Length: 315
Image (cartoon, rainbow, N blue to C red; front, top):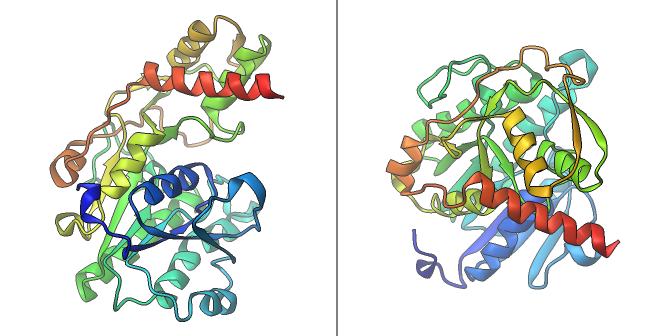
């Protein structure tokens, strides 16, 4: 959908708008002339805040505070990036993870003004597929293996129920592995790049897992392609590259581009229940959203490496 159709009157609420994906989404929303409001759990200050954006500091799990913050506010579009990736088991903190992702979303639905809402974009997770065979497609029954993936799955079905019964204008995007400049160093690709730039030994798994990596700018474009896209309402849509690659090959590709680093394959054990083949069938995204990725992995890695080199030189 062309950005030209949106006017300054379009208001957008980005939940989790100070995170890796959210920050890029905020920049693009401003470029597209949206009136942007961000919800963040933490009170961020300084460079993370962008001019022309209203920032609300509130935990979406706190019903009373969220209700007070949203009272009297109208949003045409809501994009829910709230929550965090956490694969804790249920008895080791997983109940809290579930609460953030499911109850937090339910609170949002309860307190936004649905009379003016044109679209609600929920960001799910490829982890919802669990042990399903690859390439994973949207017709497969979810098989969550953690409270995090269960919460994402339950939220998916809750929102689809609202669409079926009350025509709630939701699209559920199910991204695979999103990466790019600005991602936290606790994530896989930044960790490997950091180790290679520093020229040191660093642990990794044997790397036999097949995965699907999507560059941040491509993912953000997929989000905008959902807004007011009635063909996509009520649907779950995979977002990825559609091109599987082994974790080991990604590590070796980064090592080659950086020309440094000493990965220690086999020093990190595979996650319990990990699906060794997790990559997307993106035919539905192409059909319903008119979307497909533009940045291939090598180009995306070079952009990310260049960004991280600039950051390391600035320190």
